[in-house]
Image (tube, rainbow, N blue to C red; front, side, top):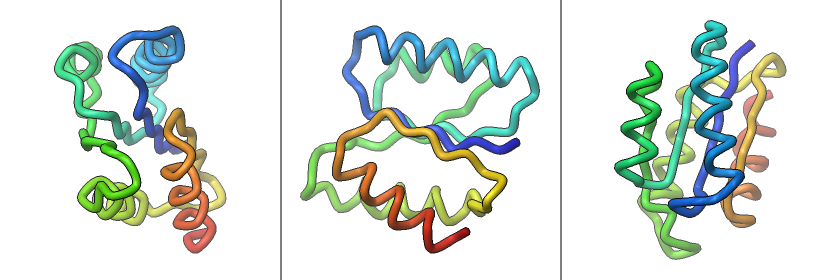
Length: 106
């Protein structure tokens, strides 16, 4: 199984803590995943200590073109197929982008 995980959450919170624990646990289980997060030094450090090299974007809102283009690039380069799980804990607009992009790669 391959999982592309996207998290644009706050610095602290239950979903954010769960996400970090889940990603590291899946890594220990040898699940192939790519992890995209909102820039956050602490979360990135924890993920790296767990063996994950996260891709970090700003997730600055609808006018944040760099995040938009970067996320599209990450989705395309991960080669989404029907056997790829796409999991996102992100802003509604980014979810729409993910769904639009992933449906063109199935």
